[in-house]
Image (cartoon, rainbow, N blue to C red; front, side, top):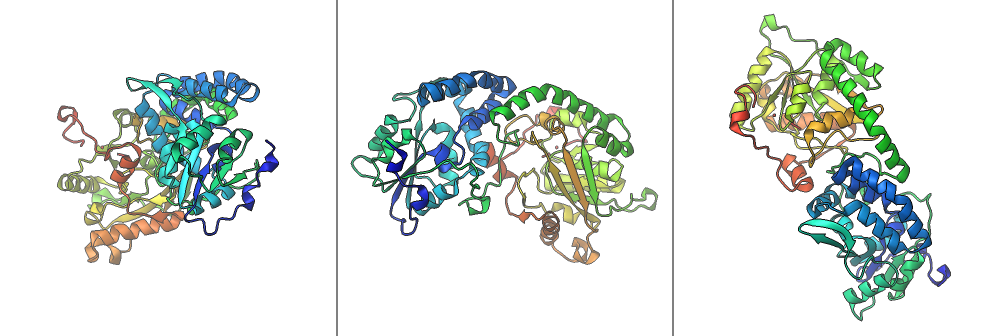
Amino acid sequence: MADASFPSVEDCASIGREKDTVVADMDGTLLRGRSSFPYFALVSFEVGGILRLLFLLLLTPLAGFLYYLVSESAGIRVLIFATFAGMRVSDIESVARAVLPKFYSEDLHPESWRVFSACGRRCVLTANPRIMVEAFLKEYLGADMVLGTEILSYRGRATGLVKKPGVLVGRNKADALKAAFGEKQPEIGLGDRHTDFPFMELCQEGYLVPPKPEVKAVTCDKLPKPIIFHDGRLVQKPSPFMALLIVLWIPAGFLLACLRIAAGCLLPMPLVYHAFWALGVRVTVKGTPPPPVNKSSGESGVLFICSHRTLLDPIFLSTALGRAIPAVTYSVSRLSEIISPIKTVRLSRDRAIDAAMIKKLLQEGDLALCPEGTTCREPFLLRFSSLFAELTDELVPVAMVNRMSMFHGTTARGWKGMDPFYFFMNPSPAYEVTFSNKLPRELTFGAGKSSHEVANYIQRVIAATLSYECTNFTRKDKYRALAGNDGTVVEKPARIKSDKIMGC
């Protein structure tokens, strides 16, 4: 059937569609990109690591050959096998929920989304494995039904094979649509290639999405639900070329990360700033930090209130100041504590115990604290815990922001011990530390303000500095969204020293 049989999606009216049903393909239709390789690569790396990503890369030429010269179904079967074989189904679901939505949301086709979002009932019919796409489509795009390729599993692990009738392409898509809707015809069908035509013919109106690489994706503010939390190590969507670069870079990048970490641990803090610059780590300092506290005068130390981007925030604060600033933390791994160039003291999440410990540390000198309690990658600030405001009036807001080109230095699902290594594995990571003025005396807890008022004010100061948005989300919200738990860290009492009770 010729492409001319279906008009362009640009000709589809979206007004008055509240009672209509739309059925849309995904790659090349709802999404601008026509290839699903980047999303298979993300699952491969996040679940199976570099070796699984390498395995996928090695089989990609075969998948491409089959896809373009034999059949779409054969090529997709190879990608599914290379990605899923042997993986726990729960791990695939976790990545689909916590990692993929961020990348899918950045590639929405504006014309397809205009029509899709205007309809009252939304269905997606895709050749992609349903397990990969369903969480994003239902939670973030408001899809009512997702029909995709079903994978086979055995004892909780994917076999790499697919269930009958196989990959949903061509006639299989039409059969799946008939099974879901029966004799009722959906009002609108959206597709982008000839293998979508069979299901589009079953709709009252069919519209083709022409390939236009230059079209700009839908902006995040137009999505029904913003993506505030997301996980995964990769910063960029991995095309085949980018995936190859990642595989080739990781061995050298790990050695470079070890060198950078060693420099931060072994050199005196006044030299770390210069060593980082020599090793490609950029540190930019803005504002005027306060001078060190005079211990002989008996003055209380300054409490630096930092926004939280990675567990390295206190270290880069110390680098910017040229002196080591102790930090109170929670859920940092033992390895991170061992290699840390500054003193870290664990929080117990017992209000009375933590308050007494922080007061004692402030009597000894300056201290760093991240009241969000966990990291956030997007331009949002989580709710600030107000405990710190009751303990001292010497408060300095510090806005922290970082830039990474290849790897994220945080994780909610993985082992936090690798966080500093992944950050320093970036070719040229950067941190920007902005010091605001010390909180005016009349705005402190000691001057009669409530602790919540102080915490909210400092949150707004930091948000304004970074052009971020304040939220009421907490650590529990993040971990429930990404890891399926509330983020509570349970330790064996025998392994906790009396003076260390840990975070990020």
